[in-house]
Image 1: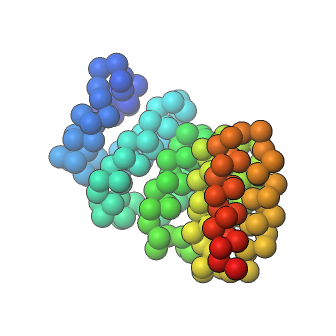
Image 2: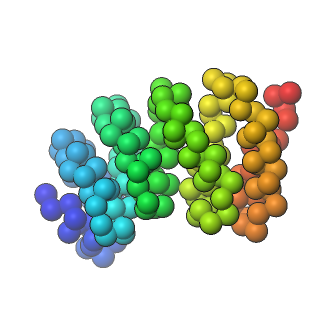
Length: 172
């Protein structure tokens, strides 16, 4: 299957469902889509990550073997669209949460950086929040980061930070 062509023609010639059905019929193709996430153009890369995210929602057990590779790509990619989808995948696999301190550091950076797109910041916040039971010593730093994010210009960032702050305060 020519995934690059299909991803580039997504919504014009092909629907998300058609691509997901093709992937479900040939789950070995996941590795080819993962390769696309790492290569330009950015639009094709983020669409590949987006399809894998949706496939993960339906078949998480088929994505599990690829999690270490997806984690590596998440830490290395400069494509924010791919970051967003890959963070969602990592959040949906709790066994991966405590696997990598480097990703945790990046999530703190993304959360506190106004230049990072809203969806990446929101998913980074969620990732950190999911780790707090494992690393309770991060709570104060995370709370400071969220309090700063509540004053952000973006309603999405404000909303996500506010909800997570409420949850943190209920735990006390």
